[in-house]
Image 1 (cartoon, rainbow, N blue to C red):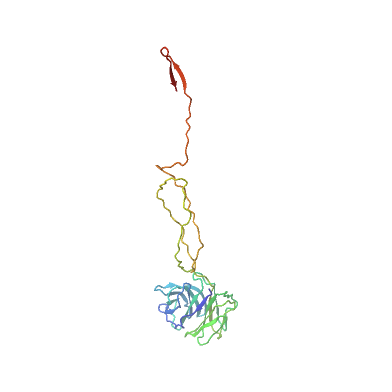
Image 2: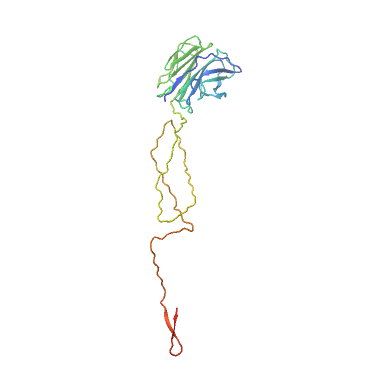
Length: 321
């Protein structure tokens, strides 16, 4: 999937800070998506006070955003922060500043929705330049590469608020008078090695920052169709007409459920199962009919006869064993 970048909200009015925190409520961050990353560009013109932290609250709990890049020239600052935000369509974005609380004309933000990226991965690249004579201000001389199906966002802050800006390299998205300075943003979703150039004024301080994303796959939860199993094979055939009463047995089918990685219906080829084990052994008291006629042979020693004396005319014979 290619990287897609939009700015769902219209231009936001600058918010005055209270206790060094400027809070932008109900910012449109676009349709929810598992791979959505929200990018916040912050422009300021505020001496000795730049953004030190940014939070985003889309679910009732504020979470810290990650700092990507910043450029500062004099009082002008161009800052970029990002965070994976998969749920909700609106959020409160709170920017904490350092030493000084800015007024509504001293800070300005823009929020972008980025999808088609791996939200768990860091951006492919970031960069920044600053210039005291910014006509134009350019990233020329700095390696700036957008790979195939990638995309990038950039912010330019200029000291003179009334001078319109013109973008090349990136496509201009916003160019507004923020009150005390010029706030301008650009984006690109095409493979490119062309530098960013923002022109339109001279002899003034300017700052330019950018963030670039590569396309990335997203893991999603997939529901599989119900499956079924069939146990097949050949019935056991006894060898002889024995009546065998086995003890009750049990079987346990073990394994690991399959986890599907994408929303596809999986059709498996026919499988087969083989049941292995040990033949049952007979315990006691079984009747075993004999099929064949048997024969017996009595072996030993022949009888030897001896004689014994008797009355006249008589003989007695004894058998001695």
